[in-house]
Amino acid sequence: MPRQLTPIAGHLWTTGFTKGDLKTPLFEDVVPTLEAWKAAGKTLAIFSSGSVQAQLQFFSYVRDGQTTRDIKPLFSAHYDTVKAGSKLEQGSYTNICSELDQDTSKVTFLTDNVKEAEAATEAGVYTVVVDRPGNAPLSNESKQRYPVIQKLTDLP
Image (cartoon, rainbow, N blue to C red):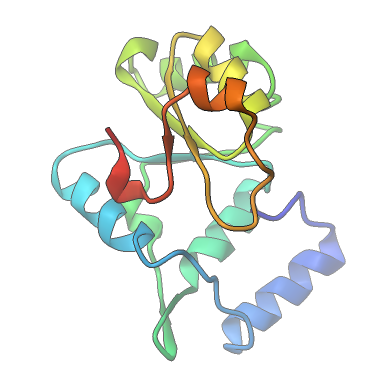
């Protein structure tokens, strides 16, 4: 997920997405799995280092073959580090769960960052590390400490 957008970067992104020059690439399992979870009544929220503005653009133009589709309706809420706090602090996850009216023990957080996993786990959130191509290698300790999946469909 992109970082906070500067005004010029935001303008470039908006132009690129609306003209069709930019399309958000997601792994093939992501959209069908999110749709299945939403259909099953799960509440889906995003907590990203990218601004909420960037998230909204990012998820409005998801690559779907040669075109794009808007998957924002799958999400109930969007959080960034301005709205929720640092992704490395336990309190951020507690605050998000509280705002979503969810007990932390009933929430699952997916991340590719072990430091984020530590903070979410400290908050009492069930945490799963997603190990995708291009991610930083996981230590054996991390693999033992957290459930690790390669695809969303592998979620235990």
